[in-house]
Amino acid sequence: MNDLFSVENLRVAYPQRADEDVHWAVDDVSFTLQPGERMGLVGESGCGKSTLGRAVMRLLPNGSRTEGKIIYKGQSVLDLTPPQMRQFRGEVVALVFQDPMTRLDPLMTIGNHCLETLKAHAPGLSNKEAKDKAIATLEKVKIPATRWNQYPHEFSGGMRQRVAIALALLLNPKLIVADEPTTSLDVTVSAQILQELTRLCSEENMALLLISHDLAMVAEYCTRIGVMYFGKMVETGKTNDVFRNPQHQYTQSLLKAALHIQSIDEVTSDPIPSKETQLIKSQAPLLKVTELQQHYTIEPNFIERIFKGQGQTIKAVDGINLELYPGEILGLVGESGCGKSTLSRTILQLIRPTAGKVEFLGTELTTLSRQDMRKERRQMQMVFQDPHACLNPAMTVGQSIADPLLIHGIATPEEAKQQVIAMLERVGLKPASTYYERSPSDLSGGQQQRVAIARALITRPKLLICDEPVSMLDASVQSQVLDLMLELKEEFELTYLFITHDLWLARFLCDRIAVMHGGKIVELGATKEIFANPQHPYTQTLLSAAPLLART
Image (cartoon, rainbow, N blue to C red; front, side):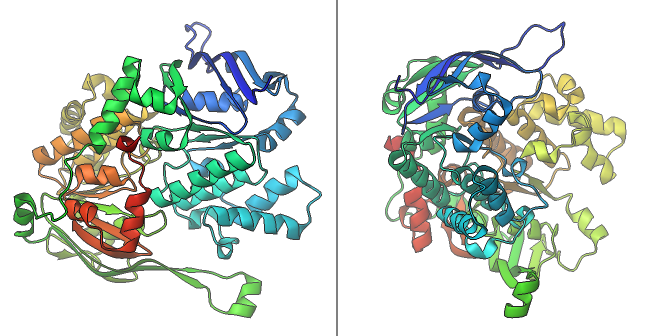
């Protein structure tokens, strides 16, 4: 038997009450992986992709029901003892989670995370050998040795994901199960990491199971693809064959949705500003940012303080000048850690700037008290990347959406309920009365994001700051949410600041694009102009790294 890994007729059900019918999250799935093979697993959220990845590593909740076989080199994984399983995880199979904070201990430095992993599996390594190996692995994912003593909370979401990937690579596993490993990463870092994984697959004969909703990425880096739908593997085959001639109706719909986002009229080499753009710029700016700075100081440890003195200053936002006009969608793109999210939070005064000004509707925000700033936030709302993390699990959907109305004293509880019901209808959560009473945990990722959008819109804001609002959603749901946002923009006369690492998404949605790099805006212009004739080398690098489905 040459198979490195095989899954045969696997069925998985999560714990449930005795009186409930069995619901199979994974239902009769079979596939094999050869050494060095790269297989992509795609499908909508809730289809069983992540469950399958966790089942392979026996990381399912206690009480879960598993049927079928999981075989590694002829040995049943389901029959391994706890000590064998501990060795199996990490040395044989490594898992990269979507959310890196589930993998990282907030009380441990990044360096200690690496040393702990190495010492647990290779106790014979000296401290120096372990540290050298860890630093070399971190550098593979573009994390410099200078950040060895920092904690997870001092890293951006994308940087934390790089750490998680480095931890998976430390032990040179035979199979990496990567569950949405580049969700939080920009295109250049995604490309670097996936190229590194591809190289390792080739050189070390390591297999890769890449779970993703990014069809373009799977098409570029995987040799084989499996499409999951309602727990079943509905289509599998060579990547090129499946993309060029999809057989199953669901595969066809996924491809259609992905191409919808990436399909845009070809830009000309000499673009001219549209009438809409000219009209937008004829008005006074809704938001004006002037020489905005947000600097952080990394406090040195005792030894560093003796030899180096002062701590290192990180210029997360470094002299930003930006104008946002009523009715436009301005895209903010750039690599993880470049300052995009920090800029958005500084604009909202969730963190006070080191220097500079933020003017909204003619009001200087940086000088306002917390109480006065709260009033301004009625007109400025934010939609975050992870809707699950920003929805209170102890509150119903209706309570979460109504909360801003009650906080600002805009409506009575009875009026708030009526407005919430109407907003739920508007964002496509029907019947609204049912969703009103549901808990966020009962909803899919796409439904949760619709709730987050409804909550942001309930105060009728002028400006909506969207921080990677669809990056965690699959292609079909992405398309639905984006179309919804465009509809709501017209209906509510909204202005969007749209933060994304997905260039094709920015191309689809935005009137203008600002490219951020190292805390600065290095290029700003009309979307067509940026794509047709990028001026800055970094912009050119971004565009060349972005996977495009149409290329496959």
